[in-house]
Length: 124
Image (cartoon, rainbow, N blue to C red; front, side, top):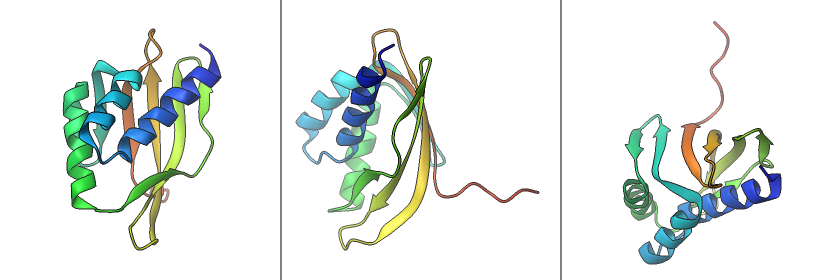
């Protein structure tokens, strides 16, 4: 798979997390998220583009003016990706850096994202 095309897919995905307009957000997800894509993070497990669009809308409504921003480049090998991001609140304060791992399907859209919030736990 072409790394620049995959990077574009991830950029569209992040843009969807920052898009307050439901119609525009769904249009972004149409381009980058599989119809049956799976999203997992510590707070939610969902499947399907509509479920993700709805969840993003709920998150945006709960944090007016907040946005996500990349904290790393987009690392790609084979059909998997990883990237770091953080929440920037409306007042400019920042949340922890978090990490997402994703899988790209044959059509170039995301079929899975697994997100972890904050730093990794210390060793036992």
